Amino acid sequence: MKFGFLLFALPFLLLIALASMVVLNSGVAFGIIRTVSVKKIVTWVLVLMPIVLVLTMMIGARVYSGINTFFYLITVTWLPLLLYLCMGALLLYLIQIITVATGHHLTMYPLALGVIFISLGAVTFGIINATMPRIVNYTISSPALAPDWSGKNIILVSDTHLGIVRSRSFMEKVVAKINSVKPDLVLVAGDIIDGPVFNYAEGLSPLKKIRSTYGVIYTPGNHEGYNSEPEKFYPIVKSLTTTLIDERTRIGNTDIIGLNYQMQNASATQTQLAGSGFTPGTPTIALLHDPKNARTLLDAGVSLVVSGHTHCGQFFPLNLLVKKIYKEYTYGVTTINGNTAITTCGVGTAMSPLRIGTNPEIVVIRIQ
Image (tube, rainbow, N blue to C red; front, side, top):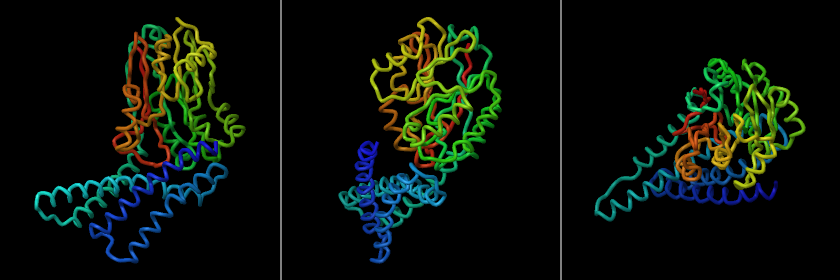
């Protein structure tokens, strides 16, 4: 786990360092930073922010602290701001090169101020937008599921990421939205927690208020694997949901299968599916947190595969990168041979608490 964290942290910190250098140098070049004292302050901020980020992540993985949460929130909000300032600075350098090459003179200071205000505005919008879950409706055709599920509301919710950023109040809002559409079945497709430790009983308690005809089915995602207290977390979530970890339950004539998150290839997913008790030809709904191998399940004959994980990239320009990786399984509905996969953008946020170019959502699935 420590090696995996270092494998993620080192290139991540290198990118932050490069972006920080671009922002600092452009601030000087374009007249935003005009004195040595201001440059020193900005330099210290740019140096300390990633250090504080890593420290708060390490502390949050072991103990919950309000002070730690406060500093963590500052640093993870600063990250997208740094990204936008860096992108804006690179754009200004390009503009400057073009104007000089064409023999024109352009004062860069007003443009640099504009980049700062636009970046601050974008981050502020993203923070507000991330707190406002939408209801998204899909109607899909499934001859296998229609006899038992026609006219019923299947709710898909994923990636609440409760913990250091999202708390019980956010979960209350999500549950209220779920209840507003009169659910018959609620499917929670992983990452119900963010990983850092917190009061699981309090944070997850709103789940008991869900008024669902056939209950709440939950399958873990990758962030549950980052949690250091599975012996505390799982008894609580299992008391509030039907938790399926490479297991099957049956509702009416339909098998509901939950496949645990694995970074694996298609053949390993097939083995996982077979081990869960999947029966070809039986109407089946599968919860698969990461949609990477959703096609494998569709080809195997699973009637409906529901996933999350992608966050649709969460904020620009990461949404463009995620779409390149997951392609048609990034978001929405994909149908193969009469079987359907649905990927949701998720309802919460990972790390940075904002969404720009994507929306938090709760999905209502209707079968016909």
